[in-house]
Length: 225
View (cartoon, rainbow, N blue to C red):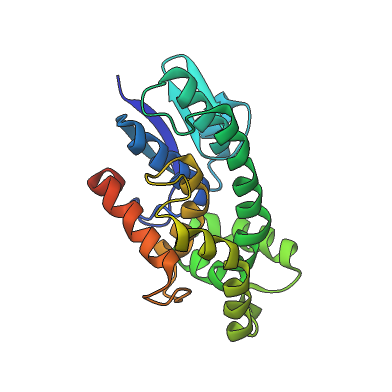
């Protein structure tokens, strides 16, 4: 039986932009596990009532329900130990830094540059909620973002310095092959790439080459169907 994942979608069902849902999509591809990805919108909280909370991703595996991308990755390694996302407890503990760096440094740096594009991509039923919640968080109208775009892009470049250095010395954050560590920042870049035409990376940037290596490694498993 295929697993089921509730996955954030835009106005089009094939517009899947959540960085957290992308982590799960990559994790399942890494393990070679089939899953049905159900499109879900911000305001469809009642559809997730069974999970005891109101956010995606939510994984359903038979009678087991797991929410939160990090918890889902841990569950997959426990329930399906072949092709581990983190091959040791130490590797998983080390990846926890990447999780928090992505969520507290990388994504906040990207957000002002992509939020208007997200707003343009989401379903009309979500727009009032999205505008109110994001404008409260940023203290300004969506239309006032990103402000000084050039300065914002330069800030993203500074934020990416440690990631860039790591990827100059090894092909993946997990070493010679991708692992769960790679999926954490990769999800953030997918968030931007799916909805935004803003260019953050030069073609010769090691991060751009790494993104392509990850995409090539998993191939068709990452296609939205």
